[in-house]
Image (cartoon, rainbow, N blue to C red):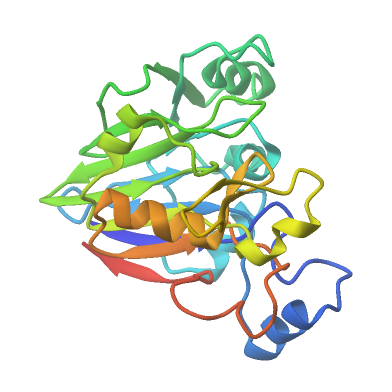
Length: 272
């Protein structure tokens, strides 16, 4: 299993357009970026590739990285930075299976699968497959499972990809409060990609503050939707991950922390 991090940033990415903060300036000086989230998973045995989330930066990511176009796509939720890149499928694919959850979201009145199907009804070469969370299905020769996480107000899912003796776990966009059944599914991964939007120290600047504090009072959730760096690392310890990399990183990290391990940048590649 070959895992390439095509996009490791949050909804605005780093550098953020029009921003001259120290972190964005440091990213420019280093020649690195964190574009909107997307992960490419190649099955070396079959030669097939699964894409987790369709970043709006799809075109740039595939031009910048030496990876093939995907054979299948999985969508974790309907926020634009994870979905709207699907429009790039126009004229690029003869056919593209798209996998998404079948659970109806009370906020939108649709499942993720239904939203994808209705929003991209003009793409006659995609086929949307409704998938039940916590039930494995086959994609690109892998066993793939969508796992419910906590990203209010919308339903959102993490992902487990297993095959060829390896296990990749992706938390998706989530707070620290991942349900127990999902934690069990995510546990013991060879590689865990965990949402870590900011360090816990920045929770004082969020209108909702920080939540899910540890025994020392350190917030493991920033506001309501995303884990802090400390929350992601705590989660990784609890899940017993062999290796953890932090993704969905914002430009709000202080510059002297923004490029420290285990925070990721685009283009990192892992062989599992």
